[in-house]
Image (cartoon, rainbow, N blue to C red; front, side, top):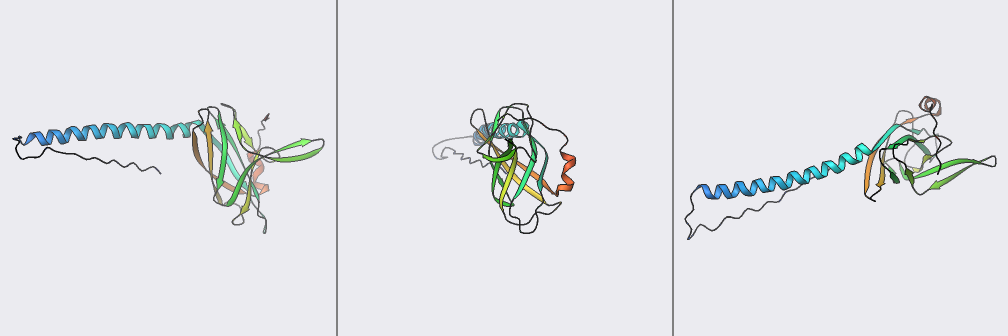
Length: 192
């Protein structure tokens, strides 16, 4: 939520020793008001442009989180992220866990290896599928068990090529393994 506050002080010349018509103070007031509205409109357009940049740049498809078993305090999140411009995913937070990390899984010498990535660089126009056995989000220290049909809120923080941060909120549905296969019918190779 963005709150804009406009502070406007209008001063009028003292009325003693001056002979002003009744219309002059009103013209001064209207002139100051017009100027304040012009500045306010310019500021509002700048804010809207910045917000629409973030929303138009990143698209998220099929976000979901794996349901947990009783006593399990970790889970994984999946989604497809596409950026219209080069960008880097630098931070993820969630309302259901204390820590969220970007991980990759790769088969090396017959052994599946998982490693944490500090960031995920997104090439312009290329979808990055975060999915089981590939890139994914790890949710650590869950605050509660995750059951089918619950909603998990994420805040993804990106940096664009000018090193400007912007955020995107994502709502992901919790699904059990038996409900997740229908969302994973396309596979993309990522060379990171």
